[in-house]
Length: 419
DNA sequence: TCTGGGGTCCTAGGACCC
DNA sequence: TCTGGGGTCCTAGGACCC
Image 1 (cartoon, helix red, strand yellow):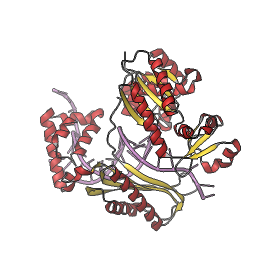
Image 2 (image 1 turned 180 degrees about the vertical axis):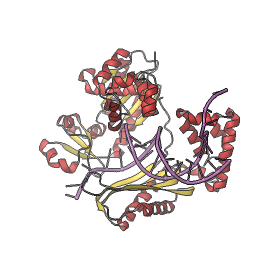
Image 3 (image 1 turned 120 degrees about the horizontal axis):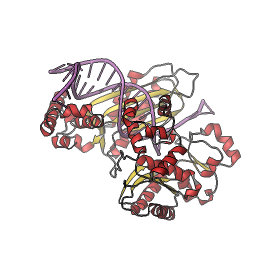
Image 4 (image 1 turned 45 degrees about the vertical axis):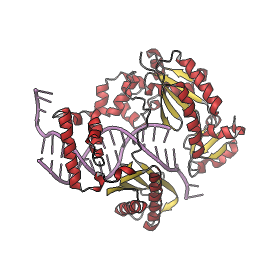
């Protein structure tokens, strides 16, 4: 019997959070808008019933919402983050291990629980009582099937918010009811490509030889196909890995046309990004700046570009980061476009305290020498040929790549051997 | 063990997720 | 005029080394 995995998903999370503090919103159509009140990012069930779409632009729907009596809220991420933490704390009482997957979702390992459905119903009751947030529970032998179960828990009112897909016949019936895009990890593009090869339903995807899937669509889709069969490929990760990148970006209220205006915007984002980074005690070695026109305006000429700028020494210095971002900007700047969006990303984040005396402060020669040492060390430890085998095997190549990347800021070869 | 350019680094971008 | 913001993983392809 495979280990049962549950996916807990808060229903209409942001809208539900607003309701906890404003009970008069209960039973009414409520939508929550994105950062600049740009578009709809959460809807209560009543709002969904009125046909309001996810991502609907506010400016096109303002009057419509008023006419329908829809209550509109600007988003309040501090509040949602706090409510999320309360829900997660409550969930820890119901499982030996838990992965916080997003602000409103968690995977739970339910290994050793006898009556799964009963347990799930008790969990729902408790979360509702302690936090005021309604949740749905999907249970399956893999994360992907748990996701599908969760979707069905929401879709089927008779389920009472809990749906179980532990048995193969249940799984087959469920896969018959949904479309390819309902599968976690399959969106529009992949659906189109799958359909071209004759895979038109989730059941098709489950039955095709995974090796063929791998060849045509890569490892990610292969894993999904295996997960649909009940073969677990995605483990529960209790400890969230350290952040690798962060970004500060915004859409402009009105198009930006001049380099001066764009420089101002990019400098602002670079500062914001640097601030975020320092709050998390991180430093960066690679900075990306990107600019793009408004893809919604088909009548305008389109342009988008990005540029990476490498700092030879990792830094948390706002000034250096801003300078690098502006340098990148001049490389990609093209006059004559109506720019809609820009941003600054910080890549290859490392703990700021590890930067001192690390290889980042050494020359390229030192770094390549360190790389050779790492290769030698791996060959000694695992035998000659390991590197070649590992890099030709798809599963491990990126892990090995990471190991080499990490050689750039660690001098402890034992770290590499553990990978 | 087999094969026969092999291998790494880097950039850019696609695709997906919430 | 007005369509979010913040992430991850994977792959293709060029430069370069041996």
